[in-house]
Length: 297
Image 1 (cartoon, rainbow, N blue to C red):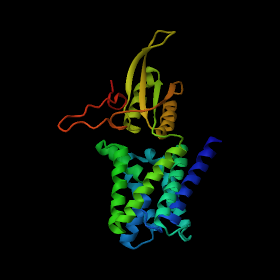
Image 2 (cartoon, rainbow, N blue to C red; image 1 turned 180 degrees about the horizontal axis):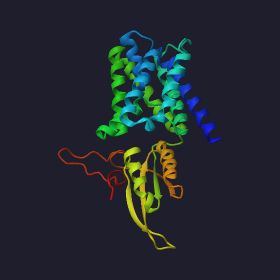
Image 3 (tube, helix red, strand yellow; image 1 turned 180 degrees about the vertical axis):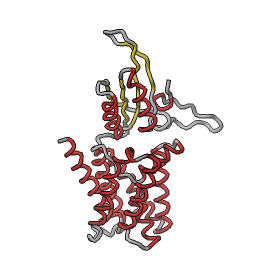
Image 4 (cartoon, rainbow, N blue to C red; image 1 turned 90 degrees about the horizontal axis):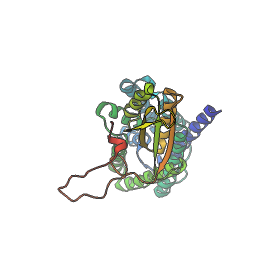
């Protein structure tokens, strides 16, 4: 039953994203980032339908990222990656809902955010720039969020150059609406989560390696002892976004079915990868304190 809900959410989410693109963002030249935004810019450059450009770039990315990440690592991305261009192709001939770029950026952002939220809640993803970010993380240890931010910014700047600076501003507004909507659908705001994982010594290293090198997050190991047995145990503390909690939980349970997992909500997290500290006076080096990201004892 859970698998059926998973696929229904994936289908609904990707369909909403495709409709938002073909009915709102595409006709109004709103390139708010992502592979759909990039396909819109490329379609104008090469004078080809954006649906075809989206198919070509999606398939190319899947092949290239499969080489860097391995087949197993991109399996979760295949469904979302292929469904979006498929739905864009099916809905490509529908008339636009509006010719007002402001309405298109806001409503398109709402639609894309809602669609992404449904996909992420189902534990899936839409591939695209996410795959590129994962590849860059593996090759250069680049942060996922930073890579995606730069790529989205490049798409919006390119849209500003190809279409007009005004369209780039609309795209920026649309990207902001997308982010906020996605957070609401996923049931989170700016808060992060703290996950404590207690596992046996046999599985501890495997779980730690998965968190560090597959999930791309840091962790802190805290020494403890069982209250009844007195046996020494290691408690792994991980701070991460809500969207990654499901992946962490399912993978930990797959590695160690008897692992003990505690999930808490963090009101605020300061440090590298999360909310930055207050500005540091010029000439002084900022000291960050983010143990869950940077310390691996």
